[in-house]
Amino acid sequence: MLSGLNGKAITLKLDDIPSKSVVRDVVPDRCFTRQTSTSIAYLIQSLSIQIIIVVIGLSIPVTGAMFPVWIIYAVVSGTTAMGFWVIAHECGHGAFSDNRKLETIIGYVLHSFLLVPYFSWQRSHSIHHRFTNHITDGETYVPLVIDGNGTTEKSGGENDLAASRALGKTQYGVRRLLSHLFFGWPAYLLAGKTGGPSYGMSNHFWPRAPFSKKLWPSIWAKKVWLSDIGVGFVLLALLAWAFQCGIASVITLYLGPLLMVNVWLVVYTWLHHTDTDVPHLAGSDFSFMRGAFLSIDRPYGKILDFLHHRIGSTHAIHHISPNIPHYHAREATLAIKKAFPKVYLFSSSPIYLALWNVASTCIAVQREEGSSRYYWKQP
Image 1: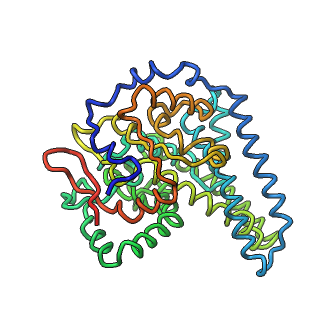
Image 2 (image 1 turned 90 degrees about the vertical axis):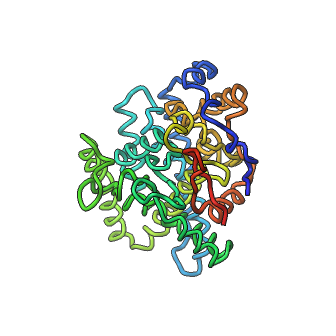
């Protein structure tokens, strides 16, 4: 089964991929410049929208009869709050400002507010960028392997394929979709679920045993503790809020929307690099640029692109040069699309169809005979 890419990613080879310097030459120089004032303006934009949404929320009665309204509020408020996540993500990449201290403070505050350990995720996310779609060294959404060797690869794909056949595509897909969307992000932070086998069972809040230390070399262990301080402060603030105004107020105005933020995060990250005809790689078939060009741009529409600063529709250039600010990413994307049409990946599939396709069919990969490329085995 092919995706909206129509098999394009299957035909690509390492020799087809341009070098980073070649890509750099076709992207206008202005795309690599960061304007602090512009970045702050986009932060104010997201903040202003969120304030309006929260003011509306404060006018909704916290009663059982209003439960459906609060569900709608959680969806809307979480969708607008995702803009903060994207800006914090840019801070972690050095794309927000040339003032590193200001950039770090803003990213730390925004991510801590969303209960994200800033430095911990900055580190694991940098590994994801360095080894995008690497079958062992990748980080996030590393698939199970059929007939894996059980030492370096994540073996056990046969069991999941058998479960898919036993349950049927629809039931298995629904279960997998719900588990990923609502539990995938905390499972990754707390136990390294879907992370690369090279790093063991990691924990973004605890860089010591019984969890693996491999993600946190040198000074990064201390940075994990610094991340915990920010998250801990927010948790204390939420506790104080609950004592003052009641737990229902915290759930409706904060926890519900936060859950929706996490849903959006999973949607974006899952669809950025996963589709039925997008391979995973190892050995001589992998390079940084090969992995970067396996990023998939998708049509999220004008409203979501506006609220989420184009994180889903300009992700290929973000992986090639993650220090490009989002407000230059569209121009840079058009440049690489024009210069490298053979390797630039854009899926025209509607997001809901792409998400269902990935959840129900991207279950386990199998190594192609005679190569270090791994393709999804269809159930």
